[in-house]
View 1 (tube, rainbow, N blue to C red):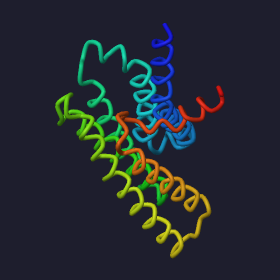
View 2: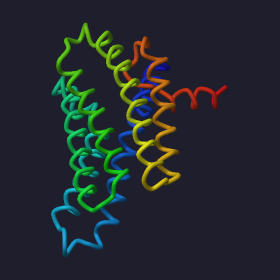
View 3: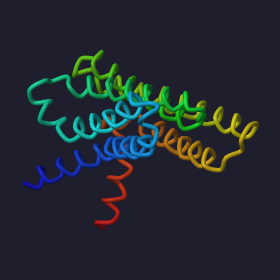
Length: 195
């Protein structure tokens, strides 16, 4: 009984980021709805992307029982959706948000490919390697974005976001030997709150 509760809590924590992404895409779709007459495809696509991510996150465990590799497929599709939304926003003239979205999309795409390309018995080792590469890529990306921001617009939110990326990168590098495939930051906060 206690083990089922623990697993349910872990599942919720793992889904937290995906829910955030889905909700932010719905909010962006709502923001874009004012331009529906000009760009109907864009508005519909962003709304559908948000609904897809929310529905996929909510139903993932049920679907995985019938389709064993759904986890990897969903992460690939989620990554492609985020890259597409980033591309759409880039066309609007926004610079930093689309690049961050595309980067997050590449992370999900890479995770999905790693999941599908490795056998179940080798996934732990593959994800450890993935975390090391991901951590280094996040640091390079964050430093590059902060430098470009310093030379162009000097927006404080970009510095905050790049700082968060560096923190995430350090956590990914420190936790790369963990047997879990997620970082579990929220889980640690919940554990501390219980104590």
